[in-house]
Length: 121
Image: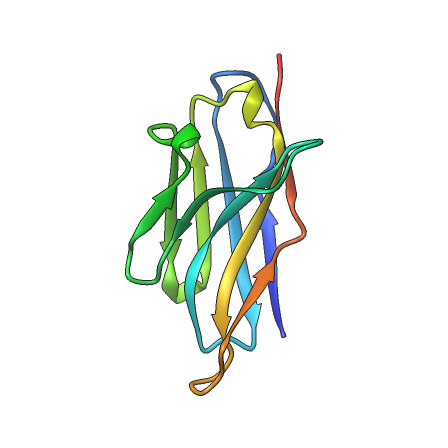
């Protein structure tokens, strides 16, 4: 089994910054794609930013230029630096990882428990 533990959410004023962290632990051989999704009240979960093990990144248009995703592969950890936050960024942010638990295993999708980010004055 694999666990994803997120941290760093909270309440911030518009224009402020937050940094989210997510560490994966457990039975991990390798992690391919790792990143962040978010879900606002009454809306579907959407991609924020993901990063492959080799460094390719996919960001949502709504966060380009404001959010930066990074990874520490040795620590099985992914970060999301969020700057210039807007009220519309308010959501529960979920960490996601595509994990291979052994050299001959297929990838399995894992999710964190979510961390609340609220942008409000």
